[in-house]
Length: 495
Image 1 (tube, one colour):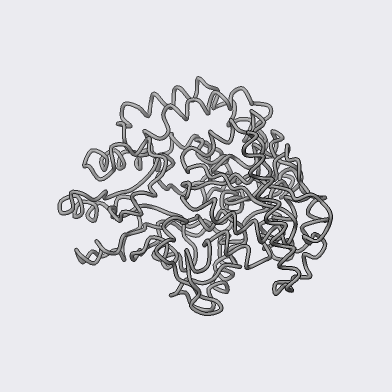
Image 2 (tube, rainbow, N blue to C red; image 1 turned 45 degrees about the vertical axis):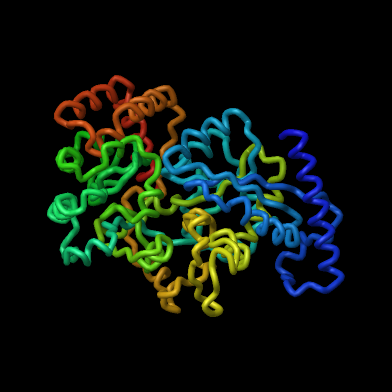
């Protein structure tokens, strides 16, 4: 940090301390005995926590974090600096940040974004068992136990999962403006092939609209559960033999890639899809017709409120509880954090305090949103400058309800969670230590072929055999054999 930044931070901290002293003289209206152990009145030095998280960087993030910091300074004597990294760049940039020793305290991680299990085993995250017991007892009572149990790695917690939907269910998501304009029937849409007539209508009638929106992380849905997200090792959901296969060699994925290439050639998919890091600008503009997303109860209301125009969806898969869904949104504490205790205090507060959780999620009341009543809110125009991915920011069941949400929204979540079907390999976490060299080579091949194949950018008739051969040369068969041995042992141990 530069000297000028240090000076600014010192002046800001001094001013904030003065404000808090003056506020205390007038009496505080916001007391909370559950966090009294770390109140701002103590003599310890204020800590600044650096929080890296995923999502398109927002214009007002620093403005909101200033308000967040006023609140967290009063509660736990800590301020917050949030650093956002865009969706498609997150995993790669975080690998560089961790390897270089970049200062950080809290890190967003997941099964599919900066891989939680693999990075926990590499030592990127701090083991949290003792910190949870000492500083996180409140959040342990607030989060569905299935998340904390399902996110353990080798019997230990290395992160705090977001309390949200438990199963993973894919949906086709539509910009309702165009559904209504062309009187399109989406009720019978389910398979990848079934969306073709809809895409054709938009392509022929809306030249400025992207019919099928996607970024470089898109993967066609097939009924398999991946051993490691976005690597070609998976087990079929209805398996009886628990065999791990190369997903690229399955008939389901091969057919899906052929369909995707057909859609790409027809102009339904943007030419730059394989290199696009985010579709946020497209969503803001409204110039898209459909995409695929992971859903939750009343998700259409959430998306509509976020984008400022109506969004509707229909299922593209069953609701399956997988490692990816259980580990779909986790906040870890960096193994190099200089303030792990304070970081856990913050995570405890974030997951139990509605005021903090809603501020982080929706911004500043009266600026980015307004309350309709005690439980419901609506976005204001300035919300476009602070449009955050709610799922990545902690306990969702503390959030205010959107204007159209029913009062029982969170009860619907609990019902959705209870009805999810377990994947056959739920809680199996592959340890790649013995095949680390091969894993690195496989990852390099994935970077070369994966996005262009999955988005339909290249012809699978030509490139799929090349990709399969390159994966074999990299040692994928050896990796699969090691994963299979571990899965067999896991099955025997867990009966």
